[in-house]
Length: 237
Image (cartoon, rainbow, N blue to C red; front, side, top):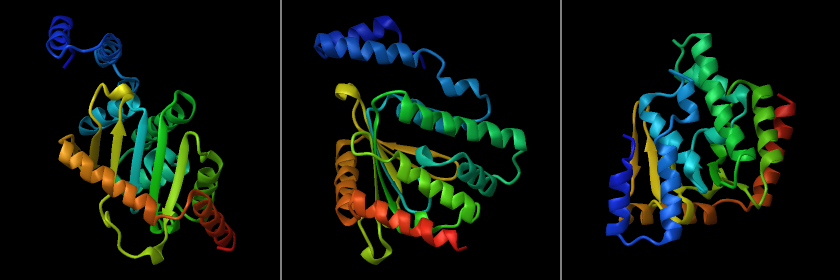
């Protein structure tokens, strides 16, 4: 629901917000009252997922852990297409293409549209799962190698021989917002819905878990070496 200006002003006065925070919050509120870019793709974003896309667009840092798949923001179009076709085989080609377009736009905005930082931790199983066939996977893994970088995008892989870890079987995303104008929150999802965890105790648990995942994972450089090894293996498939 759009934020009413009078209500927002009253809340800011009540909480004695600084002028810097006031300016930042009003900027975010103005964006919240406008149609999001993804809403132009009618039917391409499920209703339950729209809130997440809006929050993702506003975040300054995204920390994501995936067990089965390459994180959505880092997927190539061919990989995304294969995933969507597997999850929703009844979709028409037009509907599928709209969903692929939205995910590609989210990626473009991350890589080229701002200063959002992405820290991604993935299980080795995610980089070895044969989504779409060898050619699609080679393209996908090469893309991960091309876009990673310490300033904005970091990818780490938890090797299979690391054994069980604190988030075994539980993928999640942590979103942090500019100047803490909104609390950090954790996001989890199922096939048909999503959950947002903003209680401080929950956020602290997810944050600690992500830190432990990074510690259990290979370093960024060692992760890149493993990605290159899997690419090489796929060359002979």
